[in-house]
Image 1 (cartoon, helix red, strand yellow):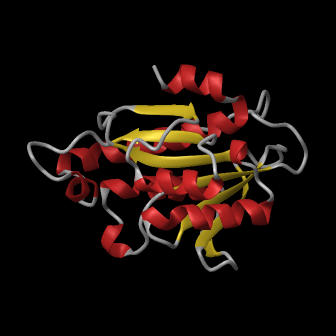
Image 2 (image 1 turned 180 degrees about the horizontal axis):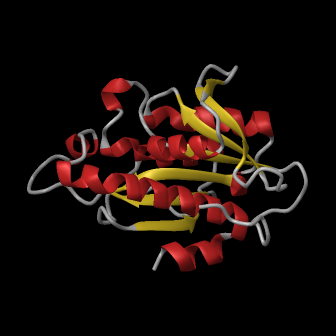
Length: 207
């Protein structure tokens, strides 16, 4: 999906957005439900035609560019994947927000959501952490919860399975078949949010 850069959330020249894909670093976590934020960040990086590189802070990997067709003057975007574990990701986000001079209202966190079924996604601004360690860490580090969230449903664990074991486990075979579409849709929602704002994005993706 590629949206025209009209009616974007911010039209001020030089303004930067941070889009943070929440997850845990390392190959042993790559396929976990908790790492869907990383998958969406990877999809957005591919759309930008770039690869993640280590930021000089040493605590994150970033991609810098624009999420619009070549030649269009859309908002500048820094995609972020923290190199710290999920429950410490807020420190890395705060450091990058300071480095790029990005206020919380231009930060988007992309993360898994237990309280949404697997095939559901919601976009919102602000709110609590709902038990998500990455969001909790971001709220604590930034001193506010007033940043955007793209919440990607993973559903609740079956039976009596522990929540931590569930989020730190791989998707089922059936879910893996549908996962690429879920990741693509979430990436589309991020583009929509930056290009057209919250209200239009919610109308399109929260229905």
